[in-house]
Length: 318
Image 1 (cartoon, rainbow, N blue to C red):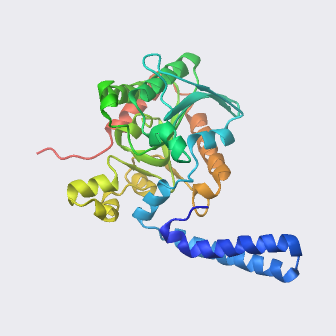
Image 2: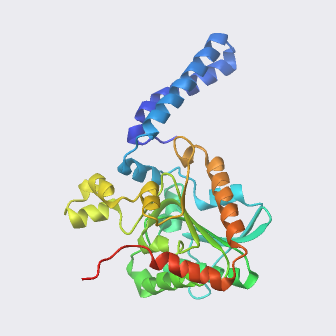
Image 3: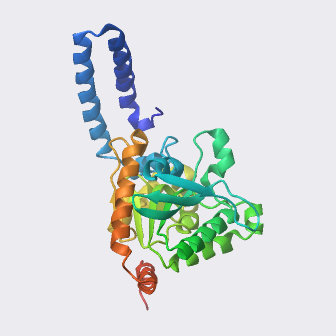
């Protein structure tokens, strides 16, 4: 278990708990069992105290936690079967975008996610969850397939943003993102998006222009990172904590603004402490949303999507 700075008070207690459990396995002493139970209660209380008063910056740290469950982890818990499809039929396959067909309860589903790595080697393979144009074109291909097979769409978004490299721009990054957003808005089938970690800028929006958008409790969703905002606004990237508070990018913030449709509560301590429960909660929200959307005609879905997104934001005419 990797601990964030604000979790340090828990680290020593949990290390002691693990040591006592190992000792109890070999000795089976009643006083050890009593101490274990007392320590478990103490840890639970302390964890609640810490996580009941998190700052926005601490939530940013949780959204980026290296152990946070990735789309493929969540898919493995939600799906009875999942067949991954590869390539955009134009250039190549982008490992940062995972996409395929799965079955969730009685529904066949098209599932698309942006995948970060679990270690350095996999992060290099997945480009740290920053998709190239071919990744978004792969998603567009799957959106076409969803309409053809009349299957609902589920997207899982965890990305700091689309890859900004020269090669990606040369291959039409901005166009791929724009076309992905447009294609998602024109879907004839229900679509449900979940921000599971970072929801960075257009790279996230390309897979989140859905009928329903939900965020995990400790995820973030923003047009720019706190570090980027601090560099622009304050000319000092070290003021990222201040920028995070100003940006208001947490799930609770976005829900209060009407940008998202709901917040999925995470297990105490964060999704990384119990990925299976997290996946079950996402699955439950997805099934509820699809059951509400499945009877709408394609035209109704498209018109309501259009109305949903054009109504966001406020402006004043002078």
